Image (cartoon, rainbow, N blue to C red; front, side, top):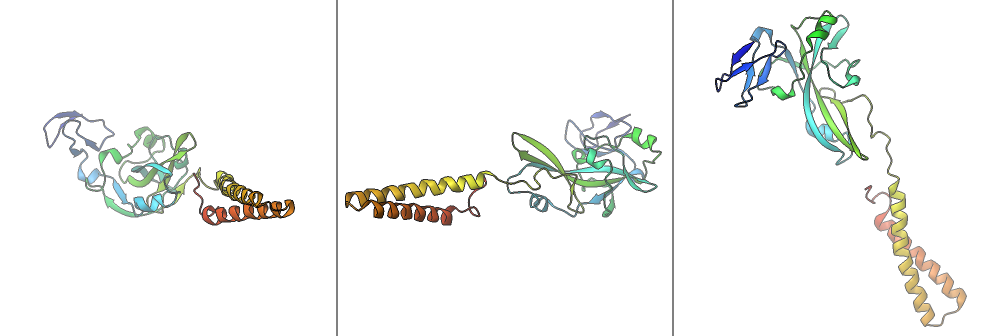
Length: 231
C-alpha cells in the first residue's frame, strides 16, 4: 500500500502490519490506521530516574522506553511480537492506565511491530491490541554489555538481574594496599628517628610496630571499606 506524507507529500510504501511510521524525508510521524482500529497504549507510571535507581550508579550505559504489543487471550494478555527477549514470552504485564493510541504518547521508533503470523497462529484478533511500556536498560558489565528489561508500570525487573548479588572483591584488597602504603612510611620514619637516637633494640622494634599499626588505623579511618571506591 502507498500513502502520501501529510507534511511533505512524499509517497511512502507502507506494510500491512504498520499502523504508525516516521517519514524518512521530513521525519514527520504518520498514523496509517483509521482511528477506530488504533491499538490501546498503556501510559508508563515508572520514569527514567526510578529505573536508574534499581542499579548501581553508572551501571546503565543506555536507557530507552519501548512499547511491546500484547493481545487479549483466553487467560490474559499474550505477546504478539517477534523480538530477542525470551523473558517476555511467559511474562504477563500488569494492568495500567490505558488510552487509545495517539501520536503524542509515543514515537514510531518506540513501537515494537505486531507479528501478524503470531496473531494468526494463536488465533488472536488485532483489534484491542495493547502496547505495554518496557524500559530497556543496557548495563555495562565486565568487557561486555547486557540488556535488562524493566516493566514501565510495576517498575520490576523482568527476568534475571546480572548485577544481583554482585560483590566488589577489589575493595578489601584496595583497603589493604592503602593501609600498607600509609603504615610503612610511618614505621620507616619512626625506625629512622629511633636509630638516630641510638634507642635500644627492643624499644626500637616495639615503637616501629606501633607506628605501623597507627598508620594502618589512620588509613582504615580515611579509606575504610565503607568509604573506599568500588572501582
